[in-house]
Image (cartoon, rainbow, N blue to C red; front, side):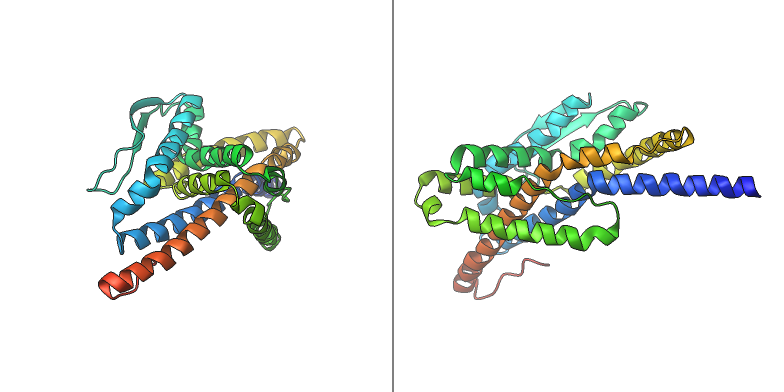
Length: 292
């Protein structure tokens, strides 16, 4: 009985350690993946139910979609998936898709199965990097913005830490708005070019249902591999959590970029809703419902 209890305690410790590490490493991807998906869906609904889907496709899709698809393609290459077909910008009125990357992989390779997670999350990662480059090259007060984006957030290792995380994210969001919309910024043409590029990219950083399916597929393999590594490490008296927390420190930049993208997506949704609701009232005599 004592041996069985020890084994159960060991399994419990391995499971909890693995879950805490997953929260620290990947929690931010899930959180902002959901936020960006919801905001993009509301924005697209606003366009479709007022000016039509073509307005959104033409206004933001020509730039945002290629960045989205290249995010998938980049991680296909990194994780050695074969790209069978790719369309960076190919609007399809039948299914509403704007582009796609079809890829295949060896299901017997754990590395390539893990790649499904990062391939699916690729649009968020590459989109964040493009936003960073846009800030760096186009904003007059780039140093102020970059200091805010370079977020030093604490690692999320349990759901109890969510309130503290949200407080950090909220503060960073408010600081971003204040630093972005300054008089000196708005007096330069590069600011308006940046704003347009950022809106195009951030509004297409959301993960589609097919992206989410691939993400969950890759996550399952990550959980199994991490659980095995943790179990082996604990048997020999090691706990790799401290190394995971070290890696988490480098994710602060991405957290800040995700906040930046969420702020811009929120602005794009609200401004689109206000303007297109007015258009809908004048032309169709009805308000736009973006939430249905």
